[in-house]
Image 1 (cartoon, rainbow, N blue to C red):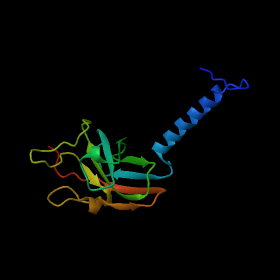
Image 2: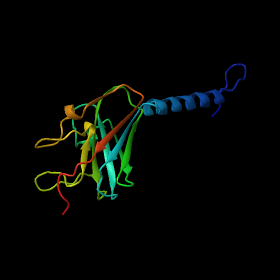
Image 3: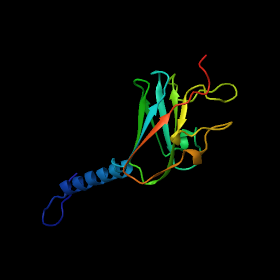
Image 4: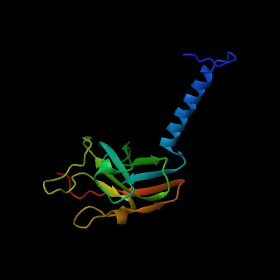
Length: 161
């Protein structure tokens, strides 16, 4: 479609450029600045099977196991019994990370009949639960922007059968 204004000037090219710029602005607005990244090094995995599922929370709501309430989620392949999860384009704030070793790649944390995790779990600050999952406040950390690196040691609460 070509639009002509008085004087015979076609503005078709201008419309295309404006639309392209809007699309780029929306894409970068959603992705955020790639320099604002939290990278999580996951260590202590007892095998290379499956994936590591990671979630970034900005409040206690849903922490640590309701990934659908997390600000961001990601999965990572495992190599040499380690994995890395990266959360890109973050605003400064208070966050907590929760993760699990999805050994059978079924997309969920498998539990035994009383609800204890059968797969490895972890949280930022290596927070551990006492008679239940870790608390958000124990896993919470301040993020001021830029690049931040964390290391989380995976805990296996039940011995493999």
